[in-house]
Image (cartoon, rainbow, N blue to C red; front, top):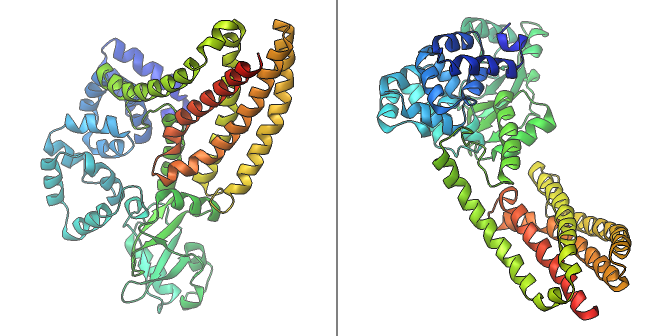
Length: 450
C-alpha cells in the first residue's frame, strides 16, 4: 500500500513543502519514492518551477516517463525542455504508444528523432498511425496494444495463445476477432472463454453487438459511449473497418476529467493545462487577453448607460437600483447557459429538442420574473416610497429575466455554429446581453414613466 493511500494528499504536500522550504531535496525525493507516478505528477504540479526542477533531477529515470504522461502540458513542457536528448529517450522508451503519442508534440525535434530510432519498425509505424489522427479523436486516444484472434479457431487454441503471451495489456476484458484481412468481426469476453468447453469453436461465441468506434470520432462522443454502454474497452477501426487499436476506460476517465476542468476553467478564460505556479509574467500575459475582452464588453454596457445620463441625474435612486436589475438577469441567464452547455456536451440537447428546451426556459424566466418583480417592487417601495419607481423596476426585472433565459438557451448553439467554445465565451457574452437589456429596460422605462 502506497504512502498516499495511508495519508491524504494534503498531508503529503505539507510534508514535501516543509522539506523543500528547508532545501532538503534528498529528503523530499525520499518522500516521493513509494508513491504512484500519478501522485508524484500531482505533487510536482503543486510546487514552484524551481523546486520542481530540483526534484526532477533526483527522480529515477525509469519512472520519469510514467510521471511525464500524467503531467499537465505546461509542466510537462517545462521539464522536457530542461532534459537533454538522451535523458528524454531513456525516460520515454518504455511508454505505451498512446501515452508516447501524447508526449511527442512537446518533444524537441532532436529528441523525437533519436526516440524514433530506438523503436523497431513495427512500433514506429504504430506511433505514426496514432499521430496521424487528431489528438482529441478516437484515433489519438487509442492504444495499439491489442489481442486479436481468427474466427475459425477453438476456445482451447485461444486460451493456449493467451498463455503464450505471458502477459496481457492492461484493462483487457475481451479479445477482438478479425478475418485474414484484419477486418473487425466482433469480440469475445475473457469470461466467455473461461466458461465454455475447450473444443467449442469461437464463431458462435462472438459478440457482434459491440460496434467498433471509428478512428475519427471526437473523444467527447467516445466518452459518452463508454458512459452509456458501461464499457471497459472498445475496438477502434479505420474507414475500411480494419481494426487499428482499442480504447480503454483509463483513457476515457482522463477525457472526462479534462472536459470537467475545461468547463470550469474556460468560464474564467483560463486554460486547464496552465501551470498553477507558472512565472508571473507568463500567467499575466495569458490572463490580460481575457481581461481586455471583458473590458470591451463593459464599455458596451457603459455606452448604453450613458444614453440615459439625463434620466440618472434627475433621479439618483435609479443609479442605486441598476445593479439589482443587471445582477438578477445575469444569474438567471447563467443558470440556463450552464444547463444548456452541459446538455450539449453530454448529447442530451441537440437541434431537434433545443426549441422545446428554450420554450421551457423562457417560461421559467417569465414565472421567476413575476415572483421576483413583486418582491423587488415591494422592497423598492418600502425603501424609496415611490410607486412608479417600484413599477418600473418590477417591469424591468420581468423583461430582463425573460431575455436572460432566452439568451442562455440560444447562445451555446449559436456559438458552436461559429466554432466558438460556449464554455469559454458564453459567460462574457451573456453578461453583456443581460446588462444591456437590463439597463435599457430599466432606464428606458424610467425615462418614459418617471
